[in-house]
Amino acid sequence: METFQGFPRPDGQAGVRNHVAVIANCSCANGIVNRIAGEVPEVVPLIHTYGCSIPGEYDRWRRILTGVCSNPNIYAVILIGVGCETDDAREIAAQIRERSGKQVFARIVQEDNGGEAVIEACVLQARIYVREAARQRREAVPVSKLVLGTQCGGSDALSGVTANPVIGYASDWVIGHGGTAILTEVAEMTGTEEMLAARCVTPELGERLKQMVYTEEMAVRKYLGPEASRIIARGNMAGGLTTIQEKALGCIKKGGTTPITGLLDYAEPVGDKKGLVIMYGPGYDPVSLSGLFACGAQVFLYSTGRGNPLGFPAAPCVKICSNSETYYKVGGEDGDMDINAGAIITEDLSVEKVGEKTVKYLLDVCSGKQTKPEIRGYGGALCVYSASQPL
Amino acid sequence: MKKGLLFDREDNVGVVKEHVEPGDEVEIGGYRIIARDVIDLPHKIALCDLEPGEQVIKYGSSIGYATQKIRSGEHVHVHNLDSEKMMK
Image (cartoon, rainbow over all chains, first blue to last red; front, side, top):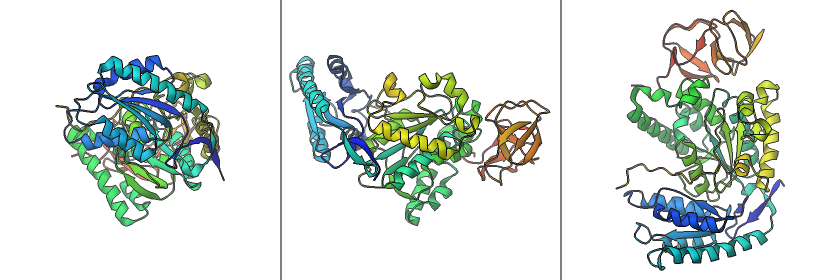
């Protein structure tokens, strides 16, 4: 049985990291989160711009927040409520405890004697969690517990030829060993919906998937009009991509060749779904990664042709470069990228060869090896999108 | 001889693996094409003549249509290729 060295959790999942997360229920408490992280540098502050005054999206925010905090990469959570925001931090804390069996320490600024008192209590608690987390040892965990998030950002015309097929190889491998892989970026499936629907395990699932891609296409059309066929960024075009279908045909190669077993909403818990699952979500990478993480993905394989440096604050992100020129331009072996899939072109290697190397690297990363974005601290913020304007 | 990549037998465009100049001979999956434009990796090159409106095929699937006549060896990109997807 293929295994990695992970951190088993009370709910049966397993983490590839053992972070203590500090997060605000509403972004008005971000400063307090930063102060706590300043006092206890071992914690991971999850800074976001969400949490209040967006009618129609309260359920969605709760799903994102509980999903993020329930991710098995997180050992324990410090949750800071403001008091006057829409949703109740203590209620959310209870929900996270119930769902994941995790320890959650919640304090509310307006009920718990103000910011300084909250910071003091949270710093003490964070130090306790950090000590506990440091004592926990990694154990052999079967690959079937792995949920692999796939992403492409800053694509070029080689992404669909080198890096994305390499990710597809790894997705097939994880699924072949009983695990789960998630494909997302729905706008970047435009034109491939028939192909994807044919891979769905039931016709009904195929119809839902087609509808999802079509709805997204219509939404993009509404915003962009005649320019919609080129909803690809400036860098994509310089990289030789011309139309959305061309980008999409390359994008879906991250999903490998296995049947599609399910659909998830943005940040919906993946639960015990196995095989290749599609998550509804945008192509904008930092937002997409947050959704995948909230679904339960512990690790990301992320392709880039243009050399996008993005990581994620609480999960390792393996950067796979599609071409050797970019790989060396952003620093080569000591640079921003973990793997150069451009070697498929410049060294005449097969996708399988680089795929095997990537699987080995992925298992090492899941067992504790740090990725380039982790080493460099390129994790950034917890970005989520809002479909409507805050009031 | 310069090299290029062909992804599917049905394709009518390939991708150059290195910088090509007009007049360079490029070998792509059995095709031998004389380049008519400056084309850089990994941009597309036409493998045959395409009429306006004709489907442009890559990975064995349509990626859009020719917006003007494209001659074998020409650079295929935003100036002569667009997509019916998401157009009015």
